[in-house]
Image (cartoon, rainbow, N blue to C red; front, side, top):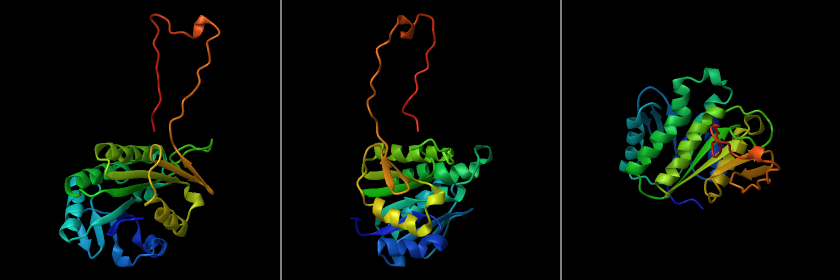
Length: 231
């Protein structure tokens, strides 16, 4: 159950507005929408900010607070603007919208918003559940920032929900948000939706096999690279 207050959505109101209102069973005035642009602007419950400007995120949160609004939750969906990008085509603007925006938003919340709040970041084909090729590897950076926010301030209930763009449409996405935003965070806070299945990422102990010969043991003057725990 979400607390009373506005739901702040970094996303496309024109495409999702009515679907989100139906999914959350709330009136349009209960939502605040943010789109990327060149300079900070506000018109009623719609905001434009520069994704590269940390000051714009601070201005956004402080403006919401100054107008007497509390936030019931935040949804970040700017990754939907760049789902088909190849790694070679990732420009600074893309990283600003997909990754740095999460960091700047978190900094603004830590500075200007003290109440507990759920924050949901949508990613698109970013995490491997099967052997299918990934499409949004660059989105991992924003997802990592999202996880760090919870470590910095546990009152920020951060979650990543990863979906396959060809499997989900605006109505389904809105319903998924309405279901996931108030749901308690589990595991590492990363959920992957694949068809009708919901996967939660977590750590699992592994069983090491006993070496059959000394060749598997570390040797003097050799160099070893140990990896793990990356996004």
